[in-house]
Length: 336
Image (cartoon, rainbow, N blue to C red; front, side):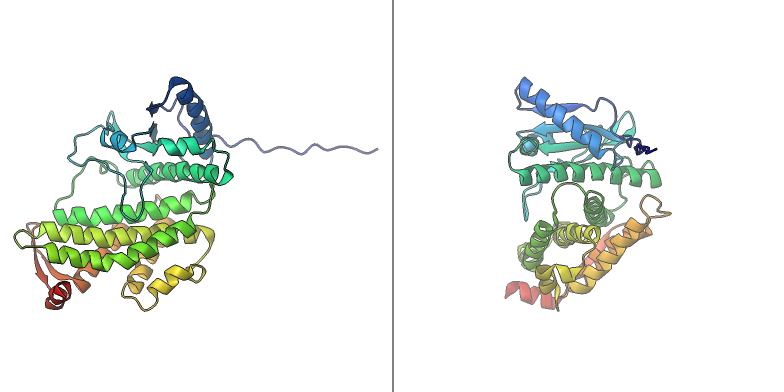
């Protein structure tokens, strides 16, 4: 007798999306807000099956994205105002850390255009929107992992020196984007071509940007020069990390990224690129199980080495202050 055997279906993977995630729609009509809330709620539920978003505080979707960022309640007092990226592209989403009753969480803020794209007839736009939301969810996971390894620090402990603050601005930007690109790689469209293009653009303009900072420096306190120089090189490193994370997720190397490979070939940044790649890979291999911060500090060492190798000598003093000496050849180049 023939027998029919029903395949046993695997149980559905549970979602890590918190119950009743608050969603704030700024500039939407009520009916449109409800429709988009349903779509985004479903998307977060599905993403939450793959990415741990259990520490998600909520989501703000705004037509005035700038105002939404600037006025986000982060649960603590800060002089820093959140603002979108405008250099080498315009930011449309961000996931800042927030404090709620002393608990560290993450809040996604996205431009209304991303929500509208989820209902677009163009399939590529839908895939881009899905990937954008997944990328932001990845940031929630990254923030939670760091907080688990180093509790009580994020938003609750301030850096002892301004130099340490500059280093950690670069460290966090590079690591967070590298990891987010790897974590969100399976959602929506392939971001690697766009990230490669942006890195090549940033790479081509950074040297001149630093020279302009030197030209504009008129002495006095060194902070107005040193901080922006760290920031300029850090921005290039950050965009390198977007590309690196996407490359690693796709199992690709620089050989597969011809424009980036050509830009780095024989360029002074090439060895630093390799160091940055290795540092991020090591951190990712031990994701969430970091015994100390040495892996993160390795990224800070890279940006500081770039500054000291190429622009100026830095002397760190026991009281947290520092002294600089700009190399004569740098001053000559800036004046040329």
